[in-house]
Every structure is written in structure tokens, then in C-alpha cells.
Length: 64
View (cartoon, rainbow, N blue to C red):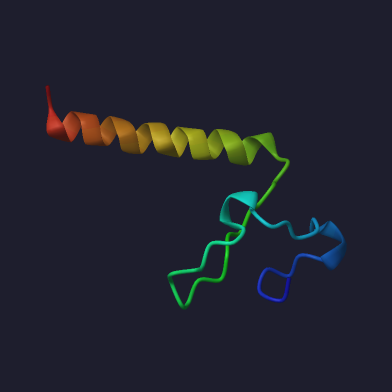
């Protein structure tokens, strides 16, 4: 909240990942996972276009 400037009222409550319950954290600096839900289709389409561009450049570089 402090870093992003996003108001606290827009955050979901924290949740524990049930897959990790009872398992020790091996990385001492591990802070958890940040999940962002952003409800704007344009951002999603931009990210998909970017992924396609990167994929196509990798395929063209490697060749058949």
C-alpha cells in the first residue's frame, strides 16, 4: 500500500496458501507472493500482445 499508493480499501484480505501450510520457508529473504487483480481489458490485451511479440521474435531468431 505504501509503495504502490493504492488505497487500503482496494486490497483483498491476506490468504494463506494451503499448499505451504506446515512447510518451512527455505529462502530467508522470502516475503511471499504479490497478486494483482486489475480489471482493465486494455492492460490484459497489451500484455498478451507483448507476449506474442516476444514469442515470435524468439521463434524467428531460433529458426526452424
